[in-house]
Amino acid sequence: MTPVLLTSSNPFMAAAEPIVQLINAAAGPLLMIVAALGVIYCIILGAKLAKAEEPQDREKAKSSLKNAIIGFVLIFVLIAALNLMLDPLTEWMNKSGGTNIELEMESD
Image (cartoon, rainbow, N blue to C red; front, top):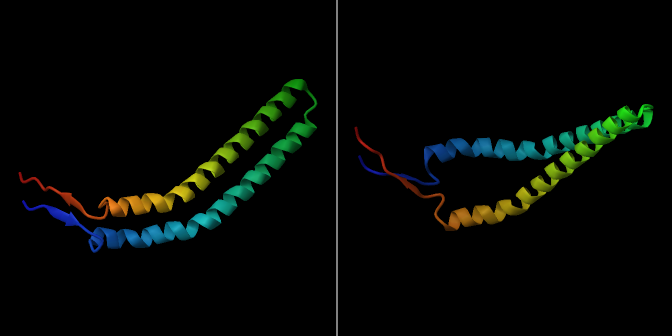
């Protein structure tokens, strides 16, 4: 069979474009919702830490709060790094021919 050349006018690329636009449009509001939920969760854990009377409960609440803060900081650092690297990666893919991929179709 003949090779198939995938270009930007490819129907697969045309079908993927609205999905990519939807994801890009939803990313900002979703990030704000996740941030708000994270803050609320940390406030609840802080209240549990303040109310804990037993040393075991206090240590458990402190550990949970520390883990939640580390997790949220890590998530936001990774999201920021992804946003910073997105444009250079897109340019690199376009320069290296990532939009023109030749596939060999094998015949049976």
